[in-house]
Length: 87
Image 1 (cartoon, rainbow, N blue to C red):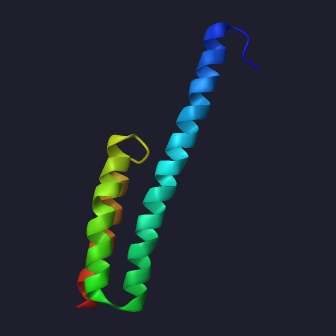
Image 2 (tube, rainbow, N blue to C red; image 1 turned 90 degrees about the vertical axis):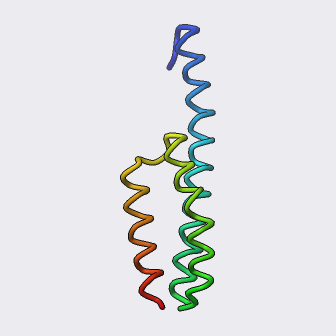
């Protein structure tokens, strides 16, 4: 348990950060799931559109510190190659 005022404040800040980051991560996963569903349906145009929508979300997660840059790049690369192979 936090005893000093500074530690109490840090605990409050950590709770807020955790909630914000969790929401961001959930939002990113939702966009990725939409791409996966479009790929599974076999519709390349829908998959491309979903991928275009997911790209900025992934990069925003990187800039906000929710996800590592290489992780986002790897996910984008793998998804784009799968979308490309549909056609």
